[in-house]
Length: 140
Image (cartoon, rainbow, N blue to C red; front, top):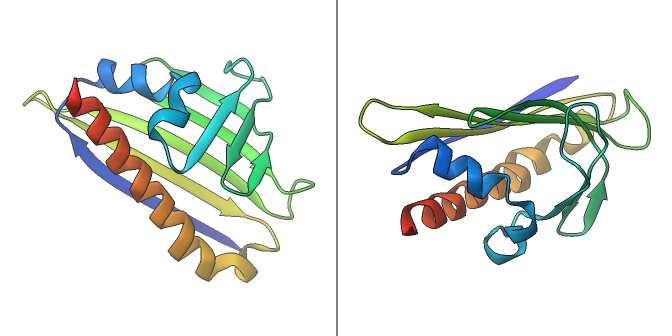
């Protein structure tokens, strides 16, 4: 079974400004209530550590395209049980705003058991982080 959650927000800031905030992992604790911390060298092929409230996992960075896209893939215990491919994607608009997309593609045999929680808690966490990113980016 598979499931995808996508959230979008338009931010009145350049994608360069948003990217700078998004990749300043040491400052996440100051503004990000969803992702508490990201540690390790964020580089394609590297394993990093992500802390959420009550959960820590160690995904592998799949994509790192400056000012555009960051994607990682994590697993619960082992591949195929509960996998999540998380993506941040930035698109500049003609009017100086930026569309920010945060999404995750979940797959594995346990997805059906977590489906309601993903729809409620994870989507709510994405939306909250999006709003916090918008507030921080538009503040400066």
